[in-house]
Amino acid sequence: MTKTQKTIVLICSILAFIGFGLWFYFDRGFEPAIGIILGIAGFASLGFPQAKKKYKKERLKWKVTFDYSNNNGNYFIGKDEMLFETHWTKASDTSIHLYKDPPSIQGVAIAQNKARIKDIKDASEYDMSSRSRTISESEIAILKNNFGNYAAIRILDIKDNTRNDNRDELHFEYVINPKGLSDFS
Image 1 (tube, rainbow, N blue to C red):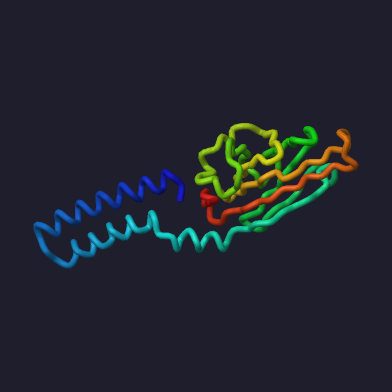
Image 2 (image 1 turned 45 degrees about the vertical axis):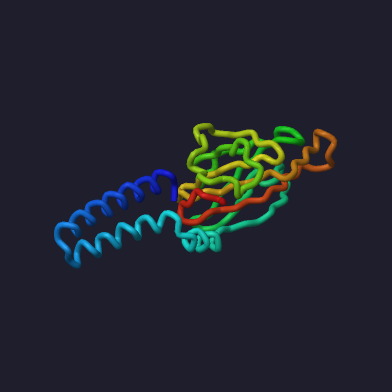
């Protein structure tokens, strides 16, 4: 759930709990009692660990190594609604350019000051206003696809054949969240 969604659920749960509580105080009946239970259920949904565990099982995770000078720098991760057509170009032996040009990509961002993918609590908070981002080794890129799903890509190693390497190669790990979920923790 995004922060906005959590805020809406919290406000609605508080209002429901208060409203049904007042109704129950003045008219003890079955209907207001059910309303109080529903208000409590709203609170419970905000911190219920089973929901987080369920979608963690549906995540796609992998490590990839590929030659970014082939296939016009395109590399596909995921499938169906969790498909991301990544597009890369050479920058140096320590950084690389990532673009939102492919048709499946809605936005790209850099998760500043995050060392691990699981440190990202809300991928929707990152700035996706630019067409491209230059990402360095150990940095994490955030991508959003046209289905509203998020992927986090952590750059592990970059090789550049114009800078003392014998090939062009990108090595990264990624996690793709299902169902538009933005929390990677």
